[in-house]
Image (cartoon, rainbow, N blue to C red; front, side, top):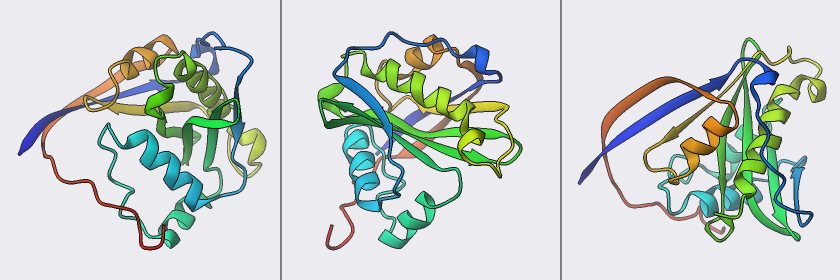
Length: 186
């Protein structure tokens, strides 16, 4: 069976583009996961993406996860609700001062509580100041992200409300397949 998949690419070209969301409450905090952990990152990826068809990283081996997470400048920022992981945003540095928001989302139980806007605000701000934490990196001049028609129904609106601007739309037919399971021993 195939589905029509639309992918939208959005960007900010200045830190002044960021329009912050309201902080949802004192019980929500966002912290950087400074120690690369394939187990934790895979938990976040699989838990956030399970119902929105994230599958591209599920077949990675443990060693491949390590390689992704240990690249200089890759950062994972996690939203917590009273100590429980609620969602995450992964920043992927690219050449020429570009940072891609590679993954962003909330676990299903935490959606609809205004946590996503706050997490996107913090993550985007951290994309803009990434070079402050990675001295060999040139200052960020562009932050971009893509979302698609399989993502949550409020994803696009959240990006637009945070000041991202649409710069590309692509549509393709895609085969819908089964979701692979975890790597052995996970």
